[in-house]
Amino acid sequence: MQDLAASDLLAAIRDRRRDEERAAADQLVLAAQWADLHPPESIHDAAVFSIPAGGREHEEPIAGEGCPLVAEFCVAELGSVLGVSTTAAKKLIGHALELRHRLPRLWAQVHAGAVPAWRARAVAETTIHSTPALTREAVGFVDVQVAAVAGKVGPAQLDRLVAEAIKRYDLAEPDPTADPEDGWLYVDPRHASIDTQDVHYAGTMRMEAELGIADALDVDRALAHGAATLKALGSTESLNVRRAKALGDLARTQTALDLHTQGTGTAAKTTDTSTDPDTSTDSDTGADPQRLPAAREVVLHVHFDANLDGLLTVFGPTGRLEEGQRLVLLDQIKSWCADSRTKVTIKPVIDLNADLSTPAYAVPDKLREQVILRDRTCVFPWCTRPARRADIDHVIPHDPDAEAEGRPQPGPTATWNLACLCRFHHRLKTHSAWRYEMVAPGVFEWTSPHGHGYRRDHTGTERIDPTGPPDPPGIPRPRRR
Image (cartoon, rainbow, N blue to C red; front, side, top):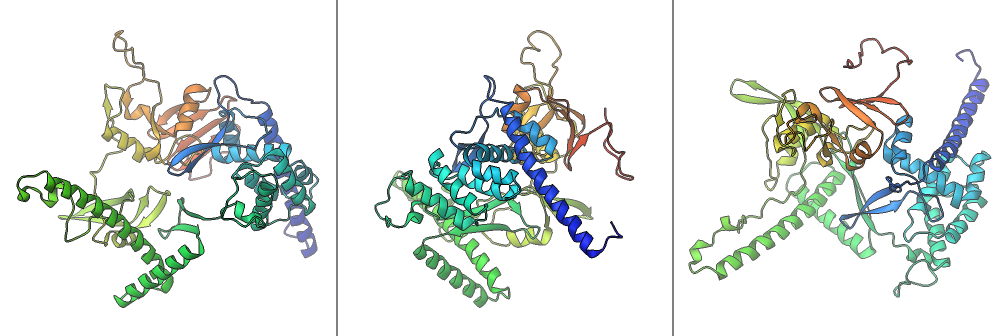
């Protein structure tokens, strides 16, 4: 290829792009066929998405009304062979079924090469998770409109199409305050979202909001005032940085006021029931009437290497932030903790190489913390759910009757027999043919129901393929047991 002329290079890369789009379309067909092979059975529920809403979890189907249901456990194997998470595999299957069954015109255009698969999947993602849910007639209207322009609609246009379908087919309860001529008002765009899983290397998270006009103007004035106050106090940071810090100050101040109100309410009750006013003190409520209580309610788990230099503890310049699995600078942590209302807790060091155990089935706190720190995330192939929110699984199942029957415990509660699994993959391991073992501390080998092998440790996942290429020089794989 190095000898190709410029025109030939352009033709070659154009052909590669066509091949890539053809392969993506074929993946949708194969994903739909995989779903056809795995309808829900008695032991399997239908695959769904667990969506946080209003502080609680609710379930949404992986595709809309009229699409076939899919056995939940089949999704994990498809994701594993593709090298993606189970959630990503759910989306692939859901998009394929939505396009095949509810967006047939767009589906046909994808396989005719007129619409790229990624563009069709964006439409399917919107129609699947529309609120309220689109009926088959409503989604058919969207399909006709999108197919008429070969899928060339942007997010805003697509949202308006969905809103028009909701209005046309009377899917939403009428809003007495809305203009009946404006179908857009049937979908309220207001939201405030923070992507807590995407942490920038600089130690920041992205926040996005769509507010009412009055609320937005109030927030803008509050941020402008806060930024000006910081500048007057001597800050030399940019206006954007000061506005961002002002938003954090607003949140901390509100939290502190909430806590202070709760504390003073408790103190008043104590005074009313006490015969001696001196017996009611601030220590009864944890509130200081001269100073607001600690306002930061967010807990961050940060790990730094430390060495002793005489009587001083010297921390390394970089550490690991559990939230988002990102590196963090020591200077960043110092700046976060500089606020006098920030509570800082330093926990004892836990030796990750120690063998801890207990005769009981329940996992004690120290052993649980050791396993969480060792595994970092769920140890299923390509899963990234944080270990701190996962279950602690006995790799070799614990036998509750072993002691009573005088037999050795096959699955003890010990470091070498515990692993972090998110709730879904814990259920998958318990109720399906997936199997795994710990071949070294924190190193797990998984075997899927169809015999595919994967090795997982805190650095990630790799396939176990005896017929594959040799290990790269200088990067040996962990030894097998």
